[in-house]
Length: 258
Image (cartoon, rainbow, N blue to C red; front, side, top):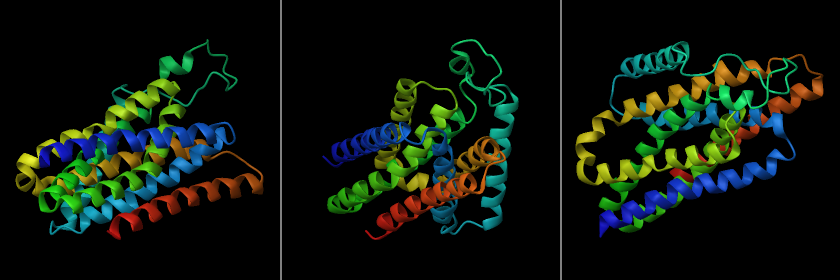
């Protein structure tokens, strides 16, 4: 019965956070559009630097090993991009370069696949956390599941925006985000059977997930914001980045209060 609860919690958690994030983002898209790139920068950096990495460094693993893993992760995503798994440049159909229709869809990928991979790893880890909580106490498992859904929502908003910015259609962004969310189910099932054996690898997985969020934010999204803007525009960018950080900090506080 415990395994059923774990599968149910991770399935609902993986899909519900994605659906809520997508519905919130759809409303915001009609108002802010481009400015949401700034929000996703704050969410991705906040998730990596304020939530995931601190959790990894709470382990007993030597910090230098985790920093080496972080460096390796950043280089890994850099090399994937070099290998032309991702599109090159930040050109869009409306950017004045006279690309043909559907150019964005054909070139979709940069940043998108990186964040999907990192998010899948993160969701996998969340699944293991949920499994461990249910194995300890079903009530703790339920509370942990709710808290994880809450902290996933701002991150999924950022991921959804990254996918749209990378050229994915809204339907594909929702589908891929949902599939990424189901990685929590895989983590939950594996965690039920081998939660003890996986525990030593957990911090390393979290660091790799963080490296993808940092790489996408710094290498793909921040350069798009480096345009000459009036003071009001720059203040708006900083405000939205700050809002993303606040959302992650609030969600992290909620998670750790249980």
